[in-house]
Image (cartoon, rainbow, N blue to C red; front, side, top):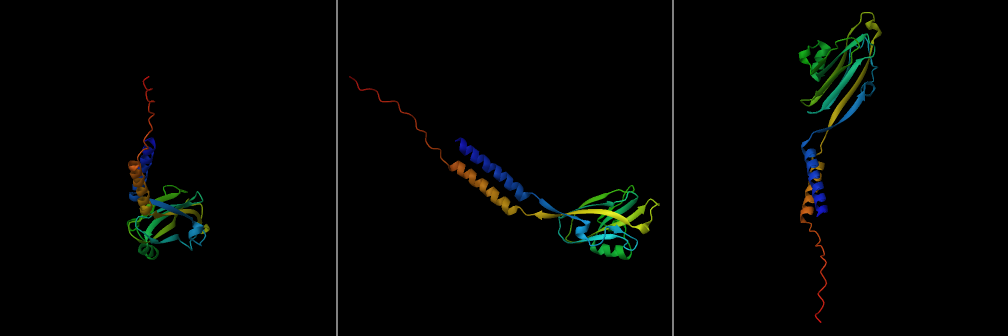
Length: 196
């Protein structure tokens, strides 16, 4: 009887795990540094003007996490996320903060910036790294070196494995209910001796 309870308890646990897998949202993250996403040197110069990373084939629900900042404490960078068409506008005529998905400006020199954004519609997005200011003693002609790290999520579809796990749980419960315990042998008292 005790073994049946253990089997049924495991079955209930598997049903709960399967339900979480069926109903939950799970992601894996692919991490990339600047050298992984661009052949350009991680240095902003007047000739380059800005650095950018194009993210293609984005799907609704994907998450983008970006960290970037100047490597020199006297410099500052701006970090912006835009759609592909707004990037074209940025290059040609410039854009305002209202035209962007994310607009991050530092509050002090040398500050590292971070954003996390969930894609709301499939398409292409562009991350822009733009020099903002320096302390007035360093020259923009020297360029601004920067660090960059990005993570992009990939959704995990666990519906089929979740269904299988829940089904195994149901099977274990059914097995525990239907399994009949072996009848226990009860020792019979010896027959009384025959009368003399």
